[in-house]
Image (cartoon, rainbow, N blue to C red; front, top):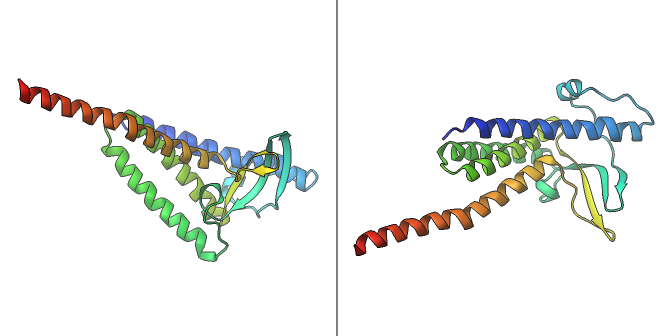
Length: 192
Protein backbone atom coordinates (compact mmCIF):
# COMPACT_ATOMS: atom_id res chain seq x y z
CA UNK A 1 0.00 0.00 0.00
CA UNK A 2 1.25 3.48 -0.86
CA UNK A 3 2.11 5.63 2.18
CA UNK A 4 3.02 8.78 0.25
CA UNK A 5 -0.58 10.16 0.10
CA UNK A 6 -0.82 10.02 3.90
CA UNK A 7 2.47 11.89 4.26
CA UNK A 8 1.20 14.52 1.79
CA UNK A 9 -2.01 14.81 3.83
CA UNK A 10 0.03 15.27 7.02
CA UNK A 11 2.12 17.95 5.30
CA UNK A 12 -0.96 19.88 4.13
CA UNK A 13 -2.57 19.65 7.58
CA UNK A 14 0.68 20.92 9.11
CA UNK A 15 0.77 23.87 6.69
CA UNK A 16 -2.91 24.64 7.37
CA UNK A 17 -2.18 24.64 11.10
CA UNK A 18 0.73 27.05 10.75
CA UNK A 19 -1.15 29.35 8.34
CA UNK A 20 -4.13 29.48 10.71
CA UNK A 21 -1.89 30.41 13.66
CA UNK A 22 -0.22 33.12 11.59
CA UNK A 23 -3.54 34.47 10.31
CA UNK A 24 -5.08 34.69 13.76
CA UNK A 25 -2.04 36.18 15.48
CA UNK A 26 -0.87 38.55 12.74
CA UNK A 27 -4.04 39.40 10.83
CA UNK A 28 -6.65 39.42 13.61
CA UNK A 29 -5.12 39.72 17.09
CA UNK A 30 -2.05 41.94 16.52
CA UNK A 31 -4.06 44.68 14.71
CA UNK A 32 -6.70 44.56 17.47
CA UNK A 33 -4.11 44.79 20.29
CA UNK A 34 -1.79 47.30 18.70
CA UNK A 35 -4.46 49.48 17.04
CA UNK A 36 -3.33 48.91 13.49
CA UNK A 37 0.13 47.60 14.38
CA UNK A 38 2.22 46.22 11.54
CA UNK A 39 1.66 42.53 11.01
CA UNK A 40 4.20 40.12 9.58
CA UNK A 41 3.78 38.25 6.32
CA UNK A 42 3.62 34.46 6.68
CA UNK A 43 7.21 33.80 5.53
CA UNK A 44 8.57 36.50 7.85
CA UNK A 45 6.48 35.14 10.73
CA UNK A 46 7.80 31.60 10.15
CA UNK A 47 11.40 32.81 9.81
CA UNK A 48 11.29 34.67 13.11
CA UNK A 49 9.75 34.09 16.50
CA UNK A 50 7.92 37.34 17.17
CA UNK A 51 7.25 38.29 20.75
CA UNK A 52 4.23 36.55 22.22
CA UNK A 53 1.06 38.58 22.01
CA UNK A 54 -0.88 39.11 25.20
CA UNK A 55 -4.27 37.52 25.81
CA UNK A 56 -7.04 38.81 23.59
CA UNK A 57 -10.58 37.72 22.85
CA UNK A 58 -12.73 38.72 19.90
CA UNK A 59 -16.35 37.57 19.81
CA UNK A 60 -17.31 36.02 16.48
CA UNK A 61 -20.59 34.31 17.47
CA UNK A 62 -22.47 34.15 20.80
CA UNK A 63 -20.82 30.75 21.44
CA UNK A 64 -17.46 31.24 19.67
CA UNK A 65 -14.51 33.60 20.16
CA UNK A 66 -11.14 33.97 18.52
CA UNK A 67 -8.65 34.25 21.37
CA UNK A 68 -4.91 34.52 21.84
CA UNK A 69 -3.81 31.97 24.42
CA UNK A 70 -0.36 30.49 24.96
CA UNK A 71 -0.57 26.85 26.01
CA UNK A 72 2.55 25.53 27.68
CA UNK A 73 1.00 22.10 28.22
CA UNK A 74 -0.40 19.54 25.79
CA UNK A 75 -3.64 19.55 23.79
CA UNK A 76 -6.53 21.51 25.29
CA UNK A 77 -4.28 22.96 28.03
CA UNK A 78 -3.65 19.70 29.89
CA UNK A 79 -0.39 19.50 31.88
CA UNK A 80 0.07 23.25 31.49
CA UNK A 81 3.31 24.34 33.17
CA UNK A 82 5.57 27.35 32.97
CA UNK A 83 9.00 25.81 33.53
CA UNK A 84 11.86 26.52 31.14
CA UNK A 85 12.28 22.82 30.49
CA UNK A 86 8.59 22.11 29.97
CA UNK A 87 8.56 23.15 26.31
CA UNK A 88 11.74 21.17 25.59
CA UNK A 89 10.44 18.09 27.38
CA UNK A 90 7.07 18.20 25.61
CA UNK A 91 8.76 18.89 22.24
CA UNK A 92 11.08 15.93 22.65
CA UNK A 93 8.23 13.68 23.75
CA UNK A 94 6.08 14.82 20.81
CA UNK A 95 8.91 14.16 18.34
CA UNK A 96 9.46 10.70 19.81
CA UNK A 97 5.75 9.92 19.55
CA UNK A 98 5.73 11.26 15.97
CA UNK A 99 8.63 8.94 15.08
CA UNK A 100 6.78 5.96 16.55
CA UNK A 101 3.65 6.93 14.61
CA UNK A 102 5.70 7.29 11.41
CA UNK A 103 7.05 3.75 11.85
CA UNK A 104 3.50 2.56 12.55
CA UNK A 105 2.34 4.31 9.35
CA UNK A 106 4.85 2.42 7.23
CA UNK A 107 3.92 -0.92 8.83
CA UNK A 108 0.16 -0.45 8.68
CA UNK A 109 -1.96 -2.17 6.05
CA UNK A 110 -5.16 -0.34 6.92
CA UNK A 111 -6.10 2.80 4.99
CA UNK A 112 -8.17 4.14 7.89
CA UNK A 113 -5.28 3.57 10.28
CA UNK A 114 -2.85 5.33 7.90
CA UNK A 115 -5.27 8.26 7.60
CA UNK A 116 -5.56 8.51 11.39
CA UNK A 117 -1.79 8.33 11.85
CA UNK A 118 -1.30 11.09 9.27
CA UNK A 119 -3.62 13.35 11.30
CA UNK A 120 -1.79 12.62 14.57
CA UNK A 121 1.66 13.23 13.05
CA UNK A 122 0.55 16.56 11.54
CA UNK A 123 -0.93 17.74 14.83
CA UNK A 124 2.04 16.70 16.93
CA UNK A 125 4.58 18.36 14.64
CA UNK A 126 2.43 21.50 14.31
CA UNK A 127 2.50 21.99 18.06
CA UNK A 128 6.22 21.11 18.29
CA UNK A 129 6.97 23.93 15.84
CA UNK A 130 5.19 26.37 18.16
CA UNK A 131 6.97 25.08 21.27
CA UNK A 132 10.37 25.40 19.61
CA UNK A 133 9.64 28.89 18.28
CA UNK A 134 7.68 30.39 21.18
CA UNK A 135 8.08 28.07 24.17
CA UNK A 136 4.31 27.50 24.04
CA UNK A 137 1.57 26.59 21.58
CA UNK A 138 -0.72 29.17 19.94
CA UNK A 139 -4.34 28.32 20.79
CA UNK A 140 -7.12 30.46 19.38
CA UNK A 141 -10.44 28.60 19.01
CA UNK A 142 -12.71 29.24 22.02
CA UNK A 143 -16.16 27.62 22.17
CA UNK A 144 -18.39 28.40 25.15
CA UNK A 145 -21.92 27.99 26.45
CA UNK A 146 -23.51 29.81 29.39
CA UNK A 147 -20.15 31.04 30.63
CA UNK A 148 -18.50 27.62 30.47
CA UNK A 149 -15.55 27.53 28.07
CA UNK A 150 -14.05 24.48 26.41
CA UNK A 151 -10.24 24.86 26.64
CA UNK A 152 -8.94 26.92 23.72
CA UNK A 153 -7.41 24.82 20.95
CA UNK A 154 -6.02 24.99 17.42
CA UNK A 155 -6.01 22.99 14.19
CA UNK A 156 -3.10 20.81 15.37
CA UNK A 157 -5.08 19.83 18.48
CA UNK A 158 -8.06 19.04 16.25
CA UNK A 159 -5.87 16.86 14.02
CA UNK A 160 -4.62 14.91 17.04
CA UNK A 161 -8.18 14.48 18.31
CA UNK A 162 -9.50 13.35 14.92
CA UNK A 163 -6.57 10.97 14.43
CA UNK A 164 -6.97 9.35 17.85
CA UNK A 165 -10.75 9.11 17.33
CA UNK A 166 -10.22 7.35 13.97
CA UNK A 167 -7.69 4.97 15.57
CA UNK A 168 -10.25 4.08 18.24
CA UNK A 169 -12.97 3.55 15.63
CA UNK A 170 -10.62 1.43 13.55
CA UNK A 171 -9.57 -0.59 16.58
CA UNK A 172 -13.08 -1.27 17.88
CA UNK A 173 -15.00 -1.73 14.65
CA UNK A 174 -12.61 -2.82 11.92
CA UNK A 175 -9.89 -4.86 13.62
CA UNK A 176 -12.46 -6.85 15.60
CA UNK A 177 -14.38 -7.59 12.41
CA UNK A 178 -11.22 -8.77 10.68
CA UNK A 179 -10.26 -11.01 13.61
CA UNK A 180 -13.78 -12.43 13.78
CA UNK A 181 -13.76 -13.19 10.04
CA UNK A 182 -10.37 -14.89 10.33
CA UNK A 183 -11.57 -16.93 13.33
CA UNK A 184 -14.75 -17.95 11.50
CA UNK A 185 -12.76 -18.96 8.42
CA UNK A 186 -10.46 -21.11 10.55
CA UNK A 187 -13.42 -22.68 12.37
CA UNK A 188 -15.22 -23.39 9.09
CA UNK A 189 -12.15 -24.99 7.51
CA UNK A 190 -11.68 -27.23 10.57
CA UNK A 191 -15.28 -28.48 10.44
CA UNK A 192 -15.15 -29.38 6.73
